Amino acid sequence: MLNVEQISKSYGPVHALREVSIEVRPNEVVGLIGENGAGKSTLMRVLAGTVRPDSGRILIDGTSVSLRDSRHANACGIAMVFQEQSLLLNMSVAENIHLAQEGEFMRLGLLDRRRMNEVARAHLARVGLDVDPRTKAGELTFAARQMVELAKALALEQRTTAPLTIFLDEPTSVLESRDIAILFDRMRSLKSRASFIFVSHRLDEVLEISDRVYVLKDGAVVAERPAAEATVPELHAMMVGRALHSGYYREDRQGVPGAEPVLEARQLTVRGAFESVDLTLRRGEVLGVAGVIGSGREELMRTLFGFLPQTGGTLKVNGQEVVLRSPTQAVAAGIGYIPRERRVEGLVMDLSVAVNMTLANLDVAMTHNMIDHGRERTIADDWIRRLHIRTPSAAQVCRNLSGGNQQKIVLARWLTAKSRILILDHPTRGLDVGAKSEVYDLIRDLSAQGVGIILTSDTLEETIGLCHTILVMRDGMITGRLDAPAEAKPSQVAVLEHMV
Image (cartoon, rainbow, N blue to C red; front, side, top):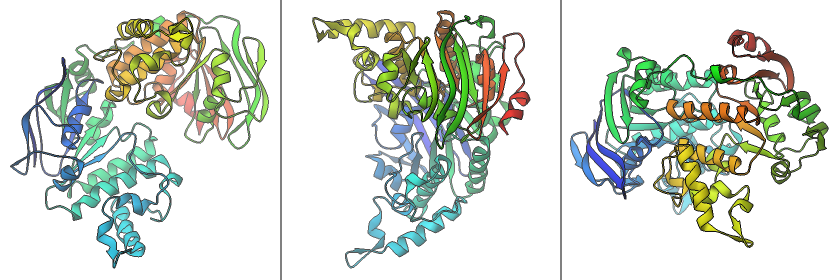
């Protein structure tokens, strides 16, 4: 029903796509995997009508089409559910579902909101979401907004006679396991009405939900496999060119942290979020904070960077008591923060790689009280080389880079600022296995250099593998503390006992 034949796209000397060919058959889920920078995002933009390919063609139900824009792609039955989500949070669910299609509900120049809400309610029922369509999108959980996105995509079925293909871009990256199970159940039930292209870095999930899997590497398709015949190690090896090894979290490089504390919290409280939190971070230690959504762990991380001012307790940095009322004060205290939403809070997307890297410490790029752009580029080029950032140059705007490369730029910013305490809030979210591996190496490097790291992660496996010590939170309180030396890591069950 959808064929991509020999599609190529270049940006100057960078070949984003090299003669890519894939096909999507009726009533199936096609997995699309590859490292950051492999070409997945460019391919999706081509199929969404926002990027014109240099060569090749696209066929819908056997007919060649030239997609002019996203509206034309929608008319051809192609819908996108984006990783960062595209809902307007200050508008209602119904308004989001029917955005740019309000003409269907106009009567004598007036918008029939009652009918619009009724139709939206029917679309929501198809994805199993029981919410009032008049509810503001910003009042929903992330998981519920993801279902609204899916309902919005399925609404295209009534506006086109073309077969429906829905792209899901990292739809599970911020969902809990219960919500992922619900999403997969909805996808299976909807396969009679639409086909899906499922893009994810979680290879086990790709194999669970997909019928076939395409592997992209360096802008080209390097493999196609029936999901039932593929394994995670095999896919990993095809993506990155090397096998998935047992020391994935670099436990062999886990050293012994220093004795002196670099950050201490005593009875730290933010009313309504968490209370009476005690923690000690030592020099070179990786301290994990585990817990389900709503446990208080995300709020704790943001408090330690001044986003959420404390309402009680004390906080010390290098032995000196501080009260962090803003991120500016946290930066001045030597604390850096890698946010879970890098595109919203981590980067200024329309500024260059070089500018983003030096934002937290402009002094390093100053000469005679003026920004020395040559010096700025030299600093950026050094980090591009050391962190293997894929970008045409330091002048490239961050918006045009893949998620993994964007994350490395955020890391480079705090390394440029010489932060001695780093708060890593889901640092590998949305990264492929190769990019994750490089981040793990970097965490071990920083730990060996004496940087104290506080980490919260999407998975217990990652938290256990990377950390020296694990704190567990439930209902806004610390419920457990577990040592995690390299030679005696606690089991996931041991951590879960304190989480639920």
